[in-house]
Image (cartoon, rainbow, N blue to C red; front, side, top):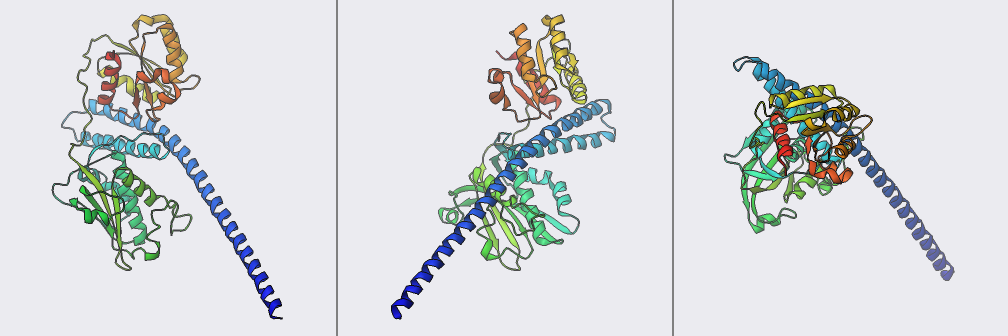
Amino acid sequence: VRAKTAELRRALGDVQQSLDARLRAEEEKDAMRRQLANVQKLESIGRLAGAVAHDFNNVLQAILGYSELALGQVPEDHTLRSVIEEIQKSALRSSNLTRQLQAFARRQPMSPQPVDIKASIEGMSSLLCRLLGNDIRLEWVPEPGVGAVLLDPGQIDQVVVNLCINARDALAGSGTIRIEARNVRLSPAEAARIQEIAPGDFIQLTIRDNGPGIPAEIQDRIFDPFFTTKPSDKGTGLGLAIVYAIVRQNGGGIRVESEPGQGAAFHIFLPRCDGEPQADPLPDTLPSPGSHKTILLADDEESVLLTTRHMLEKLGYQVHPVVRPHEALAFLERQADEIDLLLTDVDMPGMSGPELARQMRRRQPDLRCLFMTGHAFDFLGEQAPELAACGCLPKPFTTQVLARHVNEALTKT
């Protein structure tokens, strides 16, 4: 009897182990299915983000162009000047949003440069106030003399906005969010308390709230992609993952402090740099009126065509605008010797900008070309490597930026 009982127990144990193994296998399959679905969802979001950013850049180009035209008609002391200048500032800040969308879609390369943390956060204060709502108080407390950090300008916006949204959701309607910035020098012992960071000089950016805090059991998971405690229709679980990726990409680290009922504080450490924040440089030489340089301008968006034409004429160029690529080819047949530069959009119905450039160069091999695009500006290396040396002008652009790119295209040897 004892032997039989022992045998039955062993058999039951084997069955239990088999069931447990099968259950684990099913759970792993379900986890893999969810992970695959999340990856596919992320890819779809990326494609959508890239398409939206492209179309939005065309709209922003028209807004910037028309606002510059309006400024040219308004006297210096007119009250409307400040209104139009605010329109320009808003359009330029919106262009940073499209850069972020394209970066998310992996269609925009990052361009690290010295960024003034204080100026960046103060520049987005009105946006943050709108995101947080009327019942959440926003406090900004920078230490005097806060330095610069080296990263893409759009990335600091992403970090601050995502952390503020996370704090807003934790507050559930009302409370206080405090943003602090200061210079710090981390010793080896201090750096060791922050994951994967080396000792040195940093800018410490802290975003804290007075909400309920983060439960200890999930603090190790909050930066995992797709991890969220929010309902499925309220959050994607990507906000903090994006913050973590940006900080680590730029050689920084994050430390989280939170106690139940005491709120949460996210301490971001970004390496301090000695460089000065960059301004958009003016061209070294600008063409003067009567320089007799002729530009064939092609863009199927009439608002972009009109405003770009006015910008170029203001800079002293002779401009022949066309809406359709075949009109550009017809003009070349009639007056090939008059064209010094082809300035064309990339995406046009019937024929792309690169294909237009190829056909025109068959008839005029030394023709200089410059491309305008709402896509990422490294597209030529992928789609038209033989035209990569032509240069690309990302939309939206101001007259100053247009002047610099056109001048470079005309003087390039």
